[in-house]
Each structure stands twice: as structure tokens, then as C-alpha cells.
Length: 113
Length: 115
Image 1 (tube, rainbow over the protein chains, first blue to last red):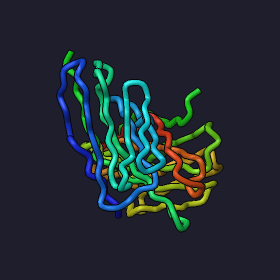
Image 2: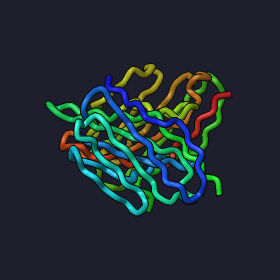
Image 3: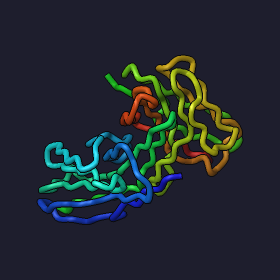
């Protein structure tokens, strides 16, 4: 099956710093999603990207769908303590009657006040 | 108000027991899913149902049996629980998967611990 490589696995940053994480795949996706999971909760959708090259923002978060359709990045600007959590990328491939969603292994973000 | 709700939130039981986890969504979605998240936080899909029909059945032991009485509910029954079943199980839903690239919405998870 399709696999996603998400990096970095973990990050420790100072409050106020910008953060960048990315996902790459050996195969193409139709949609890229970014989720955040807080401790004890389920993943919550942050941003959905539907077109190659698309750049979308949600507050301090910006994500882009790579031109090759095989990668995506998520940036967080001016990090704050509540940004702590695990961020997952996910890619959807659908076509010819099939639908497959694949998750990356997550980036654990720690913010030092 | 909760869009995707799972019960129970915590489940502690002994090896060999049979248990069920329930999931309900009030989003009007057609497709529902079960995921298993292991201790390393990796999310792996187990099953997917579209309008009560099984459409994804990954390599999961047949001790796990999903049941969808209607499109708003997808329950997971597990027989003869084993130590390796300890994990967090997430239910999710989306509009009909076959209609395009629809994001999934997740419940808060059921933390299953096998003693």
C-alpha cells in the first residue's frame, strides 16, 4: 500500500518560533489533509488541500499541496503553548471506484514557554 | 453536540473476555471507519462501512467484527481479547468516500487496556 514519510518525528521549539513539517510519498494523492491530535482526544482536521499547488491558511497555520502531488508541508507561525500535540498528515487517493486514506506517523510538537 | 461519539472512553478488561465499543455520528455522513492507534501513535485503518455495507476490511484478526445497524452507527465487537489488542480505537466518519476526497472526522477514542 501507499506509505507516507512524515518528518520530523518530534520537535522542541521555543514559544514564538515558527515550525515547519512535511510529508512525502512515493505515489500521488488527490487530497492532502493535516490533523492535530491533543492528548486524550481524537485527531482534529486543521487543513484540507484538494489541488496540486494549493496554498491554504487557517489562522497561524499554512499548508501547501505539492506540485508533484507527492508531498505537502505544514507551517505554524509564532508558536504558542497550545500548539503542543501530534500533527498528522494524511493523503487520500480515490479513483476507479477505490478510496484510500493513508496517515503519516506524526510529528510530536513540544513548545517551551 | 458531539459529531462523532464513542463509548466507552476507557475500557479495562481481562484477557479472553469479549467486549464491544459503540460509535455514533450525527453529521449525516454515509461512511464510517474504525482505526487502531498503537503506543507509537501510528493510525491504522481497520474497517470502513458505507451506508451499512463493508467496503474496507484490512488485515485484522477475525476476532474483530464490526456491525453497522444503520449508517449513523458502527460498533466494534472484539472476541477473546489478547494483550496485543491494547490500544486506542478511533471511530471516524466522512461523506460518502466514493464521491471524492472527503476528510474524515474522528471521535475521541476508546482506550482499551487488557490485563
